[in-house]
Image (cartoon, rainbow, N blue to C red; front, side):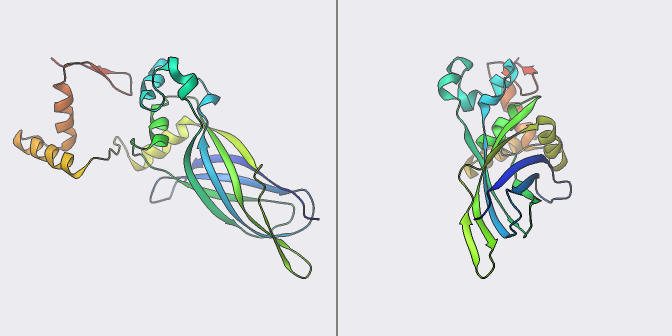
Length: 224
């Protein structure tokens, strides 16, 4: 009889030498016996579970697009998908560890990145749902079975780790996805007014609004 295989998230840290933003999730894998495992084709769905932490008023303002005003959160806050990940686990007996790379984006139009960006402190509540194929090293034939659908774990990743990753790849900057038409209009606006950058053009447009704007860092800007 094949032994059960369990998974535990040991740590999630920024990958220091990656070209693109990647978080490295260290996964501990154990079996309930001494039967050898030939390999595991591991898949994982990483989700965000917003119920598992509290939020300041400043963070709530940053989450308005995702969940609406705080009084509606009981109906609008839902566990949602962050990303899919996969890794090949080499053969082992008893226990092993594997690094699961989690590709990240700083595009604030993506729900997960928007959620991360809104948090100022504390931890990001992550849920890991494991799946995949286990190859057991039988005496005569290779046995194949699926990772149990009950295999999951939770991990609270410090917000500081996310900000460290962002600061490493996007120092003092971020990404906003715009249509080609909007980019063309911004460029024309910038050139017509002799501005030095698109960032300065957006700042000029924001300054011209009639309503005060609260920034993610808590500061505010009001049109003259």
